[in-house]
View 1 (tube, rainbow over the protein chains, first blue to last red):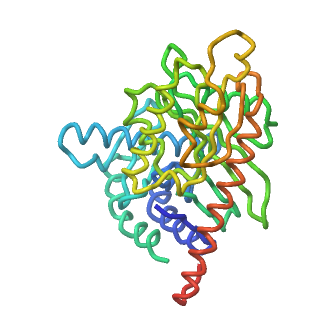
View 2: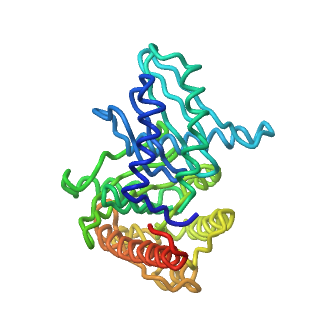
Length: 131
Length: 214
């Protein structure tokens, strides 16, 4: 657990992946965070969304469910999904230290979001760990 | 894990207020929240039980201003102090860059302080961290009760119990009245930013030595 450094170039590349793969299918907001609750990069409509609090709560939520997983004999749950009346939120673990948060409306099928998140996971991880 | 974002020109540091239940960790955050102008702070997020005890954590983002063109952003967290929330405390400590240990000056809370410090050391150990290597300050809270005829631990006793081996700065405080709150915050901010900056300089030097570009 060292210090994570995000350069201009890295931020641009990460945002590019979020834009091309997630925003393009209609996801309203995609945020990449670390497990300490820091926002690394976000893309989409952040108007009215407190991303700092969202990141802290998402990281904590993931940590708490990982403990539940351990009680059941699982290592952790790699995906979390909460359904709202209008907006839905999907959390997916990226490698050991990162979490991808996606917010989307009912117009976007959950399956498509899951598929895309799965597809970009490795790409994001490669960008995050290379230095 | 501190985050240095050269794109947004920001450094994010995570500071955790640790200590036994009812020692005044959330009170510290509330005081800071109310005293700092809106320009320099974000929303105060609290997750508490009905009895106003912290259930998961409180979070207060504050902006310290610029150093060398980089905005310093601190995220102040508290943990739930009650002993049965150990798993939650460990989660909040993930990626910590600096710690304020808020000790309760009440004599009858002596054991709880010692127990909580031990719990902190053990939780850090599980993340491969050593308390003596991390930025840390002590805050001996509720010093104002000395006039209320309540049995308090002396500063010498608190130092002997908690800070004998660590030898870090301590501050006497009455967090509910704001006494010592900013002194504590100033010292831990200074130590944490220095610590993170040193790690950053070291890691960029290493990357350069390897021929890479950060």
